[in-house]
Image (cartoon, rainbow, N blue to C red; front, side, top):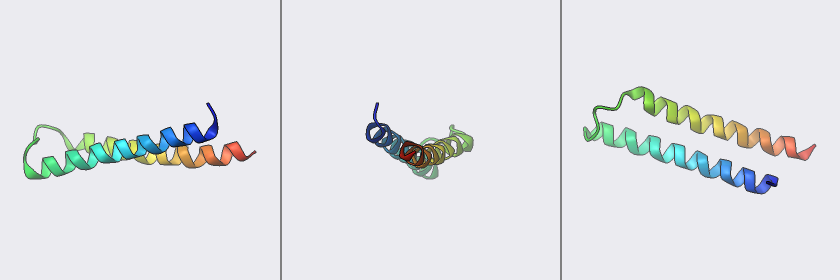
Length: 64
């Protein structure tokens, strides 16, 4: 897998993690899904941050 495909997949996964986290956060705020703990939202947000860091580091590693 070349760097552009890997970077594209990492960027897509960032969007997926952020999208799911925001959707859960909004639905939980409206009271639609109150049974989900707040820790799930934090895990999704931290997963998106981790994917962002991996995407950035991957760009740097492929230069050398």
